Image (cartoon, rainbow, N blue to C red):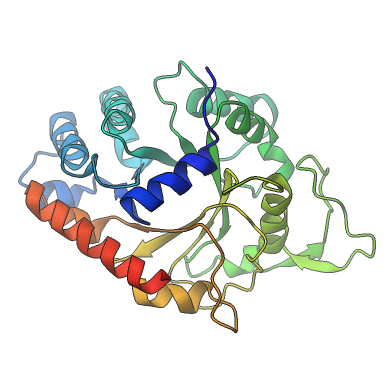
Length: 298
């Protein structure tokens, strides 16, 4: 089937519904808080309640695969239902699975999560580039070939991330599989910047937004990466329970003149999910977050 590119679909959804991605993260503590059993039935009630409450208003849902995988095949079946019912309600789906491997294994992940006909296929997938950005080529090809997207880990907010992501190496030292040209002078460049530059190349010429996004934590105090030319979505997890705020987005992403790159997509999970199981409570929490984000990015 011919599908409009993910970047274009995301840009339109954000305009219509607001710049917010809501995580569906069934933490055991949240199941408890909702009065649900820590069983596949409780998992299903939790996840589908979120879809029912917000599916017609939120731009993107981001189910965290690990919390579904923890319940084995029954949990995966619930995840399949979420990935089917969220689009039916009008929301895009971003599966947070952070897959990353090489060769035929990466191709198999791409078939599972980015190919028409797979029950686990989402509109987009988070992937890890730390086996080399070129290792993602099967996922890139599958995503772009089917109108889907990727969000590549770039500058995450966990405390020890900088040791890897801000480490420097010669630019273009990989196999060039993403199309990023090697730096003729071998100028040292951080790993995170090489990842961002790969997205720049892959999104070149796309309008209104490319389909290869980056993950950049909303609580990172020093990004150390030039994101101005990415031309793709920038997923910013950490709003709410992790300490990030909508007001801080301009500090995190803005340049010295206060300009923001396009495509910033803040993500919130527990701060919204804690308002359940009330449908009205979930809707109010999401609406308030959208208003705060709009004001911050305006």
